[in-house]
Every structure is written in C-alpha cells, then in structure tokens.
Length: 79
Image 1 (spheres, rainbow, N blue to C red):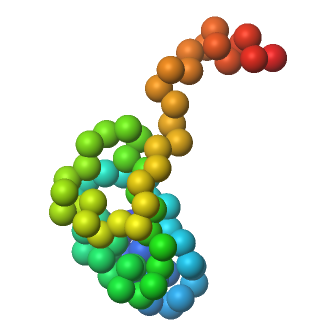
Image 2 (tube, rainbow, N blue to C red; image 1 turned 135 degrees about the horizontal axis):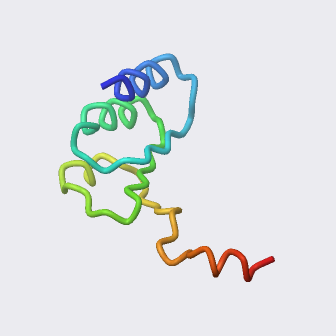
Image 3 (cartoon, one colour; image 1 turned 180 degrees about the vertical axis):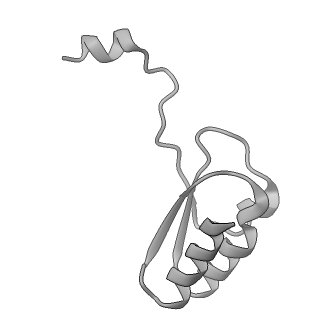
C-alpha cells in the first residue's frame, strides 16, 4: 500500500514526469489511474509475468528489463 501512496503523492505534487513500477498486480490500478490523470508517463515492468487487463488499461508502456536467460556461465563468458 505504501508504494501506491508514494505514487499518488509524487503525481499530485508534480515531482516526477515518469514512473516505472516493477510489479504486476492489480492493486496498483488506482495509483496508475491517478498518475496518468495527472499527466505522468506510467511504465510497468512486470518482470515477464502476465498482468491483469484492468491494470494494462491504465499504463502508458510495458517493458521488462529482467533477462531470464542469464546464467552465471553466460555472465562469466562476457568478461
């Protein structure tokens, strides 16, 4: 619940222009809705999980930055 309050406060005080939320449950629908109404660009990163349709309606973008296929051997070989 605290994250939703933080999103609301940041949005209403115009302290941000974009919010990137790393989550995917519908508990954040009211906060996302309010942020977008306040003109905030609301991006969601559900970490490759499915998100509820009602949350999808209230975001401006969807991006996952976590890469599932990284293993320790792949990271060690990059050096």
